[in-house]
Image (cartoon, rainbow, N blue to C red; front, side, top):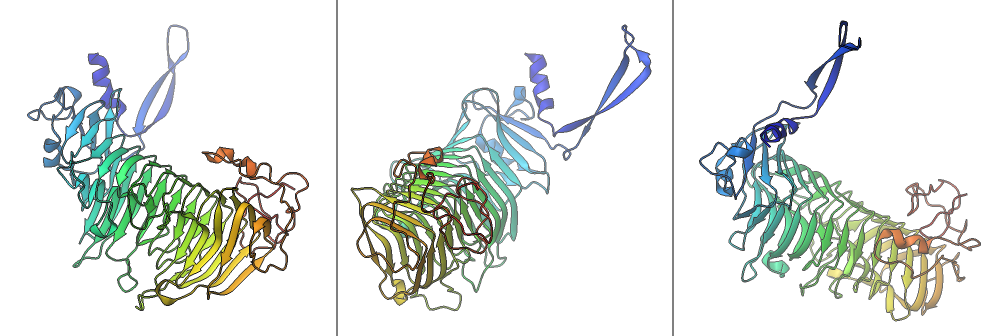
Length: 527
């Protein structure tokens, strides 16, 4: 055991590469040339390794080996860490209170927090005694991996969180990674106006020094019963007169279950990427408005390859949303099903008459699949401009009576220049359309099959059965969606309108040629 205890720290140093030197004049007993191997580090110089073990450690130790591990999280909070340092919690141990580390890593030399040993994830429990179980305040270059985090008190408290990343009067905070965290039972307020609560939140502000984040990665985390929100970012600099957006924000591969209100919400970002996440059950306890995945006051957001289901209620209750003050939002290759509020909200408040309120413009929604989303497939309200909706599949089961498109006038403004092309509306239930006083709604080369009460005018519409493999046959998981491929002989093959800059691939990755008449729907039949 002593041998392995001594070896483990050596295994945790930065990656190395082997340089092999042959010395033919020195031979072993069998006459083979002896190889001498020189190990040369290719990573940055290692910092200090610290260990924490709540069962066997002591705060009087130096913390730099497993045999001299620290005991408490308070001891960790006293230390100012530096570039390349690593902090390892022993697997299966429990820590009460708040982890609020000090110090920052350096470029290419982040500070790593992880577990060591076999067993359950180390657990940090705020117990409702702190607002944030883990707080990264005015630090950068940190990576947190393989921890269990919870924060539940006897009563709900506004702004209670599992993990909070906060920059104030800091400038740009670079490189924060949250990976493989299990965050559960965070009972913040479910009232949005009270500040809610969250499993993970980032927040940037600053009166003296405008602050933002660059390079946030939230990946492969599992969030369960976090109230009010799952993963949300916010900014004091979201308005266009103070615009200082966070950059390179990536939210990827996370599983969110039984969330009180909103699921994933980037705010005040430019170029955020939200992909390959699964949200099962949002707005489970909130009475105010909430949706699944949506940007707010963001530019150039990409939302792709996600699955959202089980959103509760109709305030808003959609799986996806392109929201207030957003430009160039792209929703593609997503799956939405069984959301009571519908598939998609596109909105902005026309009542805020400020120069920096640009409304919602140039949203693209393509190659998505919606199955049995209720209330309304699309709710479009307020000053919304230039939306392009093409090559999506929408299936409505017999029990549903919905509005396929509902327009509203949030703040007194109606939408204009909304274009639907190459979509399949397959309705076994009942679908209606309400355009209000919106302007320039264009439908071209869509399929309206089934019970459409008042379908819009479409000069190249198809009313025939599109011959999907198994309409309504999708289940939990994207792997079930071959049901929405086009069967042989489908009238949708080669019947679509040409779309410039069409994304180059369908829902399954099949190439979509530029300049040729495409198929209608989310499936491009290989030619």
